[in-house]
Image (cartoon, rainbow, N blue to C red; front, side):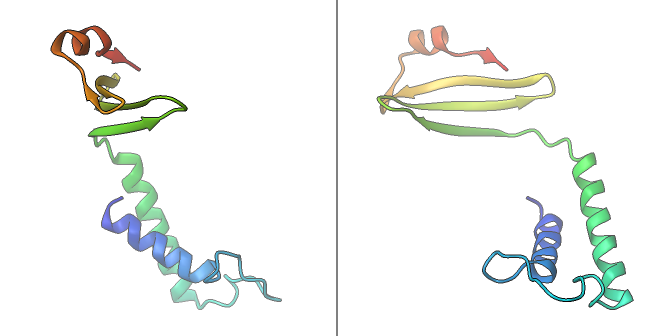
Amino acid sequence: MRAVGKTATLILFLVFVHPFGVFVQTDNSSAANLGADEQRFIREVTANELAAQKQDHTLWQYIESKREETKTTLSEIVETQEGSLHGLLAVNGKSLSPAEGAERSGSHQ
């Protein structure tokens, strides 16, 4: 998450959420307790964050570890505009040989 997203999330958390993760219950709504400047600021921050997320076309490359009952796999994931490419790197901590890697990798989702 970008810094703007963290800021917006933090502001919304501080304004609307109780420190223990429960919404604050008051006689008046939380928005009614805020001044006009604070309400405008929260609307602007929220609108800016939503617009930034809508325009974000970032693609990622990362390593993913999955643990199932009897098997742990390590895969490289590369996001493309057409979908994600998955390349299996290791099973149960053992690296694949180049032949095994070529045989098992290259799935497209």
